[in-house]
Image (cartoon, rainbow, N blue to C red):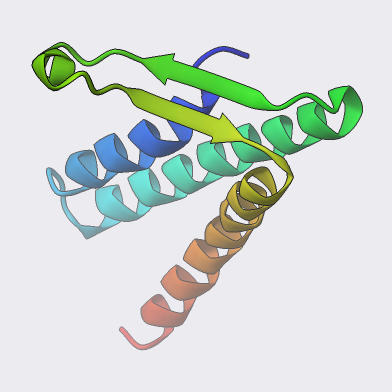
Length: 106
């Protein structure tokens, strides 16, 4: 359960850089894999919240920001987790439809 909110941020960020490394087909495969993974993680977070009714909190201290007394605080309540869930489940089918639409014109 730990770090899943952070993964919903880092996985698309890392996936976007990885997709730049290959050709168009590789980029599409990476995009589909990343959006599927984020959809699974966001669905798990939403179901976990529905059954346990507990707010999800994650706090990270980032060393370069320590002199400024700053940290990264991720917080998942009803509204934010529902938006993460909706974004996660919309992006995967959207990617499939977009890739099929683009390939039909090539």
